[in-house]
Image 1 (cartoon, helix red, strand yellow):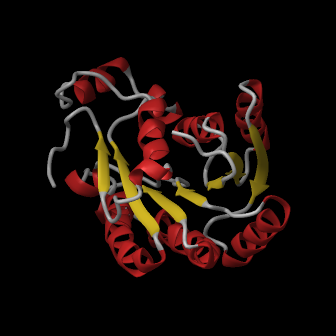
Image 2 (tube, rainbow, N blue to C red):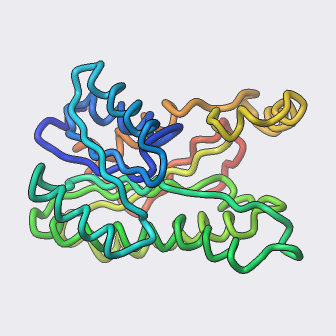
Image 3 (cartoon, rainbow, N blue to C red):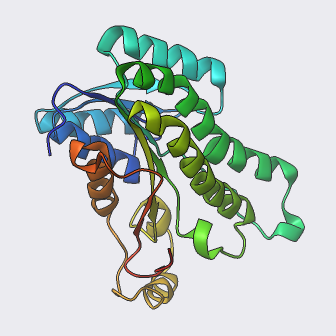
Length: 249
């Protein structure tokens, strides 16, 4: 799979799954825009990882939930590098808590970043893709959007909402040969999971048929396929990367 001559924008690209996606796309020849909000040092680490393997990338600081910032960033990127031809909506946050005690601010924050942010970023790039009659939009959902999880009603609602958004966008953009798909990771080894106790991690593994947590690179590999020419006849779909934890349609 080769992405020479294309540009990608990866939101939340400074660490974890986002970093792995940035590095993988750059390795395929794509010029990658690494988005971050408040951690420039982590974003620089992602950029260094891209450059160390001979890839090309650049940093873009903006809040995905702020339409003015998003539009300005996409305009600057388009002027300097072209595109983006590929958008990976990976930015996400959590504000966990039982619904009975959850503050509206915590609900709004998660929905704004995880769901509304995808709407804003996709809207900002789709005109360029439609004009070229080629583009890839890839939304990062979660197994929680399919199975649910106690203490994460806001996160689950946002990630489930991404699936409906993905399918509807796919139908709207298909006539211009722009594909829209989703990837739904299960439990992946990230900064978040590394903070869990060994006991909790073992309990999670017991729910996974393959018996282990996934790696960010597992998700990045699926994103790389969806970004490639080889996935051109695939749209409105969700790839589940969860070790068999969820096997539904």
